[in-house]
Length: 239
Picture (cartoon, one colour):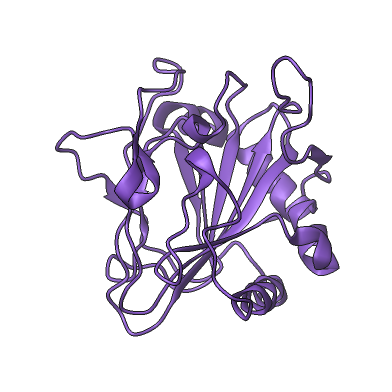
């Protein structure tokens, strides 16, 4: 029988339907709304991390320490169980951000591997994409191209698209598999797995929370400076 870890390695992702309890989903939604109430910006970054597009595509990043309940969730056994189901390498919180596509004008996002945005060599990590609203093809769900991580443990070439504020790592014909799922569901995928998202053409925002977990601290070459975070996650509990 194939284990969840073997399946993850074979296809580069796993889906966990209805993984969050209602109170956990409420904590994330409340924090997201608090940040949405602030004026929109470009995501608070520059260069290859300048990926926001105002109200069309907002990235509300690195604010979890202002919300103790969010930080507790990010480091909880709930997340520990997701990490263990995907990989046996453990996990340290590396990055987190809310991603919101505005109603009727939410911008799409090009094919990319998350690891391409790091900017230097590093160990592959796990992206945990959490639907805060029902994710549909109409409101900009994530699409994935399955990837055998055993056969293709590498980053592909990417190019920066200045007009769209994003990297693009694939221009082929494969449209990917749409990750249509309900609010509170999780799509966990490798930082090597190509993915994109469509535009939001509905009359409501599409909210998601993206948290990422590395097997080891990710440090800037030369300086040894820690890139973002390296916070340990609790032991798993039932998901």
